[in-house]
Image 1 (cartoon, helix red, strand yellow):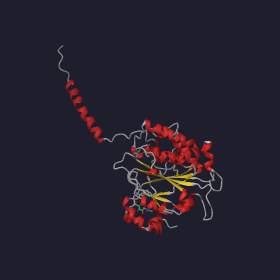
Image 2: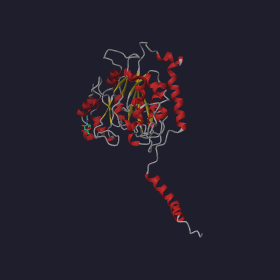
Image 3: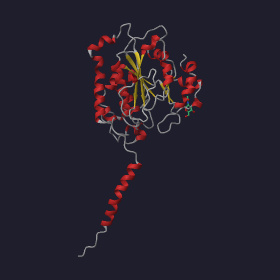
Length: 360
Ligand SMILES: *[C@@H]1O[C@H](CO)[C@@H](O)[C@H](O)[C@H]1NC(C)=O
């Protein structure tokens, strides 16, 4: 039998020639999958979280805490999470320029993505160099935003034993009330009282939602049934990324490893994967639902949201009425903060800072 040249040879030849071309196009058209957190970053974080999780149980720290003594003044730690310049720094500056007696009632910490270009500017004023904590790259739709929030929380826990509430703020957030108003609201004071650390009484302000049309997609955004056994579907919750946690919950959050193993996995479906909006509500609802209010103090307008971004306010929308409307909530407390605002809202907001926003 005389063998004729196999018809496969030209086909194979063509295929082997076109493969590199196919790969070239695939890698240029499809976005690369978001990078998981690198091992060195993970180890760095773990060391920091371990120290933060045990700090309150180390006896040498106890005298500084003075829980229950009358001269203990608990503080609010404001945690700024940003990957651009702090565009509303002048407004926050005003918010923090409080009278002498309130000066030692807060601390500020900033996590700025070190890989963005141009580099995040340090605005000066209250936002000085030493407010900026050791930071790492963050990317939307990845667990890096969970890590960044936990890094801020852990740093604040370690930095000052008087940090009692931990409030996460983004570069798009603005205050809706004065600092004194926020402080009195969180510590439930009327004008004559002085805040004390009454650990068992206060709750964390974090949104915890179990009814959402996209809950199933969100749960499976790392692959079907990947979350079990750590998180069963009926334990999965969603909520706002911007929360205020008590010290007790802050320590729980940085000490957590079991759920993190799952939430840190790469998102396969970015449209429904917002790890930072899922991890904290799920975790806190599993460990201490009763210790949470179930709502956030940060107003976000989800009407007509696009690509998972809420409504962004532009200068033509900024007015005293907007501030009054944004403060209004269905809960026990007013909203204290709001997002998102475009950077060019700074001027109109500054114009009414003293008369409207910070006047209570
Ligand atoms: C929320 O956004 C919508 C447009 O997306 C707007 O019409 C509405 O007035 C906004 N609500 C508030 C309270 O600003």
